[in-house]
Length: 104
Image 1 (cartoon, rainbow, N blue to C red):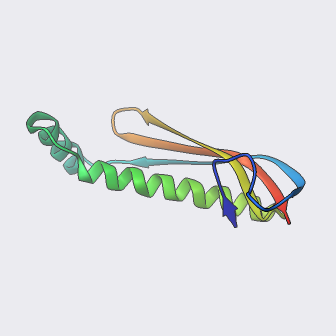
Image 2: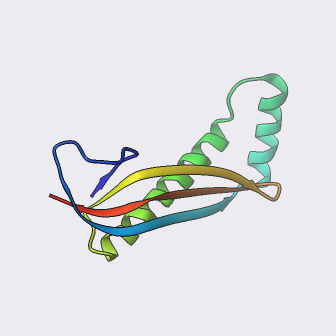
């Protein structure tokens, strides 16, 4: 499956548009991770715990997007857009949208 943020696939022709699809994931962060992030914020630096959680959420959203494209008979998703949101105090939401297509 080709997944790209571009609107086309170089060297390929889009033969069929299957429609806009989305994959959304909401993941909770635990109290220990919140405390560690607070310490990181206080002392400076990067929060590896939150970065890992965000990476997991992004990968899960893209996997869901790929599964939906496959179910439609597509072999690629073009024009992918990723959005990140905080829901509540410690929930991370990642949404991935794109257009499912068949390329040849």
